[in-house]
Length: 82
Length: 238
Image (tube, rainbow over the protein chains, first blue to last red):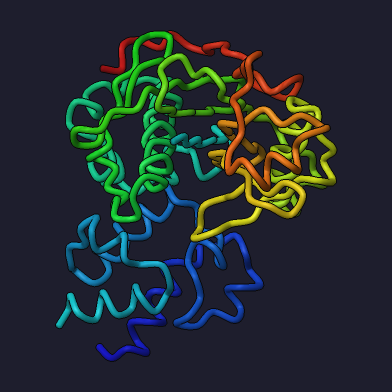
């Protein structure tokens, strides 16, 4: 799976949790998940669990803490799936 | 250091169906999971625990940027009155959670008496919901201005390194501040100094800090604060 495919899948998972639709329309690797997309911190837990299910990986809390942008999430998943 | 978190129980995000099946085990300790009731009151207790963890995390982050938001490492121990502590390793913060209707509001502090802490939560108007981030700032500034007898025009809030900072007359005030909004509610907590109208600017510039209020700041933020009114039998969350 290449980075573009991971990005698209990540955005698809994030979409139901996004409160700022305008930011979603212009989403990029630099988009901040909490600040720009306005995903609630509790829902970020659900997002991470969905990442685990969708990519068949495990993401620990230390990993999650480093994820601020969509790009961070894509890079983390890319590294996990090798 | 202080922290606060607000949860709107009526928001669709708070519903049982909105959660991932593994959510509870991801964020709660085994003991906390066991404390969750199996009846309709589980929703409120779940978000009581969550809000206390989130509030403690905000306080912890003010002490160290190295703190990771690992919810199971923030262990919530509350009594029936929803007062208690949140532990993170060897660190322990006094905590209290207040409930008013659909609003769950948690505040943690360094001091179990919560002396000098101004906090509150209230429902946002339909107009305010268009920009809840701005609304929570206005609510907070209004509450602080009222409590400290300041002109709201002299106050503003800026985020520095993602941490809200109170600015008075263009200068940062050494007040710990925590903001939160969720659904239709906004909440805040502030360990605010006493700032007199006559000396506020000179003190701000020269003293590098303020004397804490001799009268103290009530936990209730005037008419907009929430009052403690448990809606259900709380049980023992420990």
